[in-house]
Image 1 (tube, helix red, strand yellow):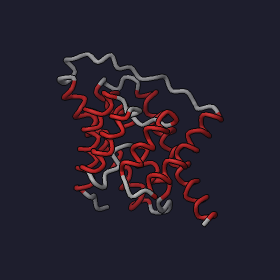
Image 2: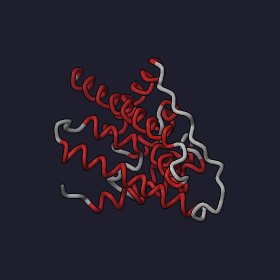
Image 3: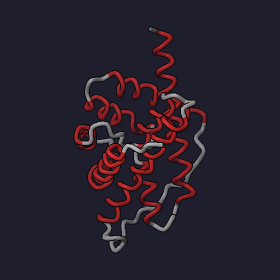
Length: 195
């Protein structure tokens, strides 16, 4: 497998900026949406957020394990690396206590899962149809309450905390990412049927 090092550097850099700046101000704010759009513009081509990568995985060639799954899996790892570096810098390698604690993972109830899938379908249409990263970033700001947008940051925080909360963070990162990705796939399929 050929690893696109430029893509990995962009992912790590974008995730670093997101963890360092954006999650401190909140992604669900106007400032967070503007910062996300700036990050996407600066690190052109980078997914930066795990939900974007999961959506690419689910809407890509599902049978292409090397080109689709492995390449996007490497992006997820690069996002965790970038977020980890930011957290280490912000906490002076753990010298500053953040009070971070993983939220307990709960299997989503049917309506919560359907809401996440619907949010993924709507947002993916904004993300792939729009000519602007601004539209996608503001779409995430609006729909962010239905998706886990801080997955890479949460995984990094758990790793920096000696794995504390990993049993809660990892399933949320996977389940929420898959639900958003399934929503993206549903959005693509509905669009294909309509057009």
